[in-house]
Length: 132
Image 1 (cartoon, rainbow, N blue to C red):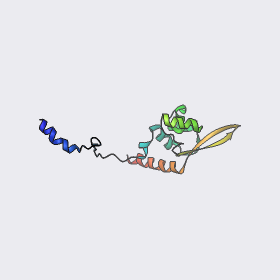
Image 2: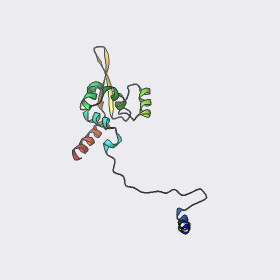
Image 3: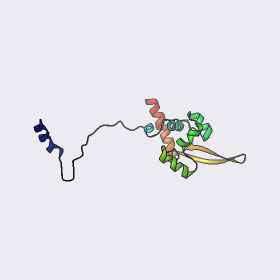
Image 4: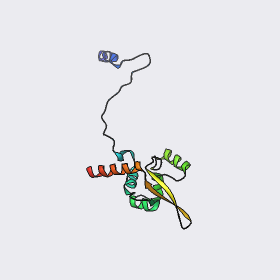
């Protein structure tokens, strides 16, 4: 039995720098547009068909308005950076959505819309949804 072990040791290609690293090749499924985002982020991208405030957008995307902040991204860049590291990268950080502040009765309200990159992703998501 030890003879079998001795015969296989040279196949490990041991060197002075330590044991050789074993590698395996596996085929992975091709990444889809939706595979890099959280499911609520995908729903939000699909729901944003016109500029919307966060509340209306969250409702359209089936996401709680409070948790939508983590998915979309905080308007405060420092908070967004912390949340991106703590949880996941937000749609604002990914530059899939843009925000425009509008004055409504003396109050600033954020309206979100898709960027060109976001519109391309939305089209791909719709295509994947139809094909899958």
